[in-house]
Length: 315
Image 1 (cartoon, rainbow, N blue to C red):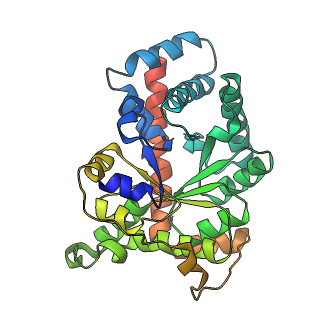
Image 2: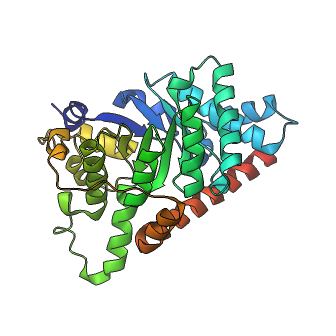
């Protein structure tokens, strides 16, 4: 049995792509998108007509409404291929505006529902800022489920759990990138692999905390750099994996064992913590890696959202 099928015995596999034509071969349960992935997809000849057609059909609407139509159109195509859910992201430029994030989420859900897709099949993707987490708290109470992304710090995960968020996406690879860059020549790749990988450790800590205290928020490891990181998180609720790494998993029959186990988490020696806005901001500020990566991630998604805007305006 290849590694992808082995992994599916313990973990829900999610495809991390806007490339819906590539999805079926990996048979993922869910799919996630973000502005960068959608931008990458619409630049390919296969998808350019979809963009042009969607923009033409909604010409005359405000730009932000056309963008949402494009995002939802990709989501609808993805939902034809996956049996589960698609994650669609709120504009990263709204990451510090709770009310605007809620309003944009309402619009995305309305577009999906107008196309006959029940809200249970959509996750609204929001950056894990304090304002984003509070927006998710409001949306979850309305039955609109959220995927909190750009999550790098333990305090972000705890606050998401307290807000009743459906799912979080801690970023394994970007955490690994930061520590590797920070260590420079001292970095020992072999010694920092697998369970010792700082990105893996971050997700394992969150998973253990949630299972220990019965927090129902789903943990979905994201942004992988290598198969070793994925194998070390086998057993995590979900893992969202790029097509390249899905193909590598499919090509190997090396054994995978469950590494993250809810039963083991119950006995872990960890204490419950809680955050208000002030303590959350302080804890995030104390974590240089998380502070830098959250800011960098929002900037990156905002740049790509701007590029998508320009592509739409040029059509």
